Amino acid sequence: QVQLVESGGGLVQAGGSLRLSCAASGRIDSSYVMSWFRQAPGKEREFVAHIGWSGGSTLYADSVKGRFSISSDNAKNTVFLQLNSLKPEDTYVYYCRARSGLTANTYWGQGTQVTVSP
Image (cartoon, rainbow, N blue to C red):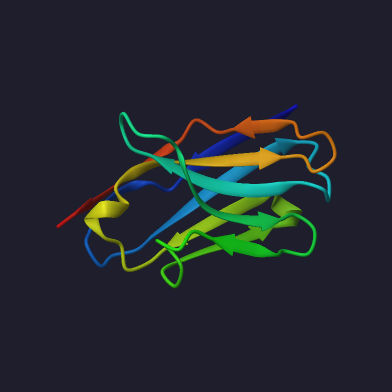
């Protein structure tokens, strides 16, 4: 079992930055891929970025490429999402997800709200 706790969301003006954290507890092995998704009310959850727990390979949605950066601190079981050059359309609840590459077991955090004002 893996538990994920996100933090770092808040209210920021357009052009500003935030750093989201996702602290994982439980067994995270090298097969895991850690991802960030985001969701607006009444909309489907959409992929933002992911990072491989082993090797650190990354992938980004086109909408955030060049502005957001995902990273991890394996020793602290924490994944980060650096959000730069924020736009009002980046206003979402941001969720962390852990998915095992061996079992496909998937775990979600509770989400953290990011609100970007014009």
